[in-house]
Length: 282
Image (cartoon, rainbow, N blue to C red):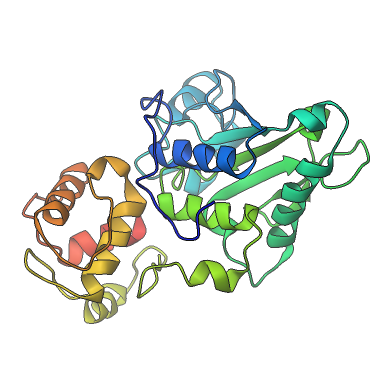
């Protein structure tokens, strides 16, 4: 299993129109973590997180999966599904030991106010962390216990925040929880300086931001470039970047231009205030 994030380990996404590459990357890592497990489902044409925001809005308007602000913003919420079911065949046979291990790790992280990892990616999850017939779960967005139907006694359902379901770094945070890592172990793998996503800019926030984040262009090097590369990686696999070397070369410049095109920023390849702000808040 990985000892650091490697977002190049991503065999072809079978349905890129409905599934983000980051979510497919997570599934491949889960299969490596527990080879006997199965993919229970990602996209499904029904109400809720397994379907796209557009489908929910058209057929089930007001559905809870598109009600909260994080589930109605970002580049993925309208066109991508935002859930993943992880199935445990041994649990289907009545042996809950494997599913218990992973559900318990999720529950421990969710209840720990000093552990921010699940806040980065999950809206909710359901699974089995004991031997009874009651499903355990947590609504991470509202920070409260939750439960669901008995099918979750043999599969773990994860609903992702729609504005994060294509974010590789957020998927990595979730994966480290499932691998049993501590917060300190996870933090040690983050870019230097770490990726920080502040709230929507207000007041003099942009002034403070630019004081810490200089304008970058082709030829720049160092930690600020490495941070830029980490943010580009977290946004979208299709930007064409797969490394963080701290060198603002042609590949990084092209990734910046693609990002700028996606958000109508003007594709000059220069990372100034507007590009930094969009990277940090979308």
